[in-house]
Image (cartoon, rainbow, N blue to C red; front, side, top):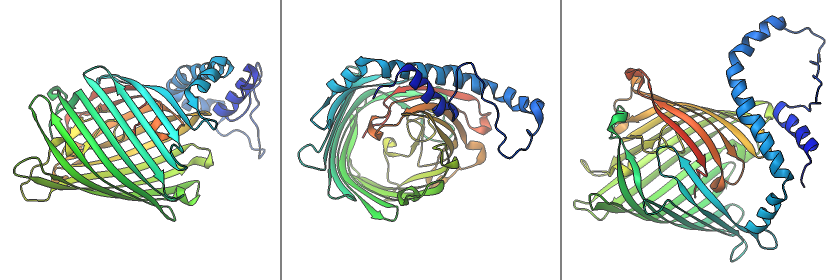
Length: 417
């Protein structure tokens, strides 16, 4: 159902301020308990002045433009016609949509996303995504998932990636920004996975596959068989709201059969997240600690740098570009805040500190940590089709003065399969 302009304005007032507003009138401050204002008008101006820059950015760069855009979209018949054309089936269980991704410092990607639920039989979900920027960048993923029951599923996923804009700064916690180089790669990955809800908030995921990686400039590469498993407990799966935790642990192994001498390695990691839904208003504060380590199975064995733990990109410490930090271990702590901006849009604020280190966190010291900050907007759609606008920055290590050395601007669909 489309809303008219007055209805949209009324809804916007409720979503953004928590109460309806009437044009030309200022809503009086209620006194629910009969007590006078604490601090008087003079005291309230101190936080108003301090927070004025953030308010101006939010008001004029977020709320007003988004409100105008959403109103125009809702009142346009073109929106309904586009939805009708891009979705198929009597139950609209299939469709196709254009995708794009602009990430400053990386090649852009333009493509399409196709989904089909209950494709061949009930519970069968087909997903296809392809994107390109000509010969320098080609991405393609096909995923076919089948729900065994309401608690478990199996899937088969195949992906192809060819790009020439991969970043490499070297290995270690203190690699300088001036060391940045680029390399070309081609990766083919085929994997089967199984997922199951074990009950009482516990989720199990397993995967086994083969990945072939080649580096174009050096005419070299490797082929590995790998296995992965992760176990997670989330109190939200118990139906609890307010405050809770999510804890997860993962492990994987890989065997390189393409090189002599042959090498193999083990990877493992854990994450612990505490969250608080403030007044159960979908304004969520989170604090997350993540770790990741990789060790060779044989003493003195080698591990390709593309298989080492990394920070930056689309998951942790997003103020850095993908591949900015690489080493044998990684650790980060992230403070995040998420709040509703519109009926289908959330705002996100992130502050993180962490870095990569040697084997077993060798060299982990407070002075070697970096800082990453980011703020953005994300649509409330299925994970593989989310649209995001994000800007962020990253710094040198604290020992090096914590100077801002990375700036990031991302717009588009940042999540894949």
